[in-house]
Image 1 (cartoon, rainbow, N blue to C red):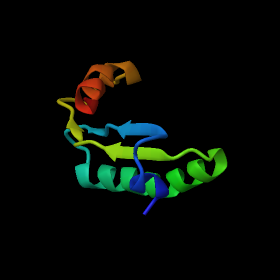
Image 2 (image 1 turned 120 degrees about the vertical axis):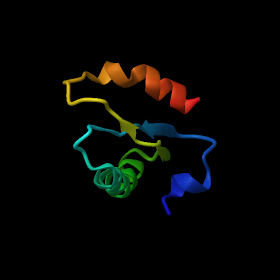
Image 3 (image 1 turned 180 degrees about the vertical axis):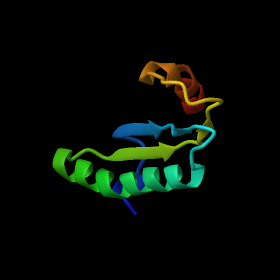
Image 4 (image 1 turned 90 degrees about the vertical axis):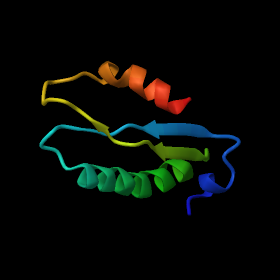
Length: 82
């Protein structure tokens, strides 16, 4: 367990939103996001001495494979964080 899971009253909050295309693999994407959390959070907390609180939301299914920018997901991310 990462220290930040014990006390989530302070620190930096990270909300991850994974989005996959019709041909994408939702489970593989979620596994990758989980592994990223396991690998990165302890390093960030140790290096910066700040607890991080990570939440991976429900993956978002995209209707097509069109190219998107990060801000295309901002509204959805904000709605899910509240």
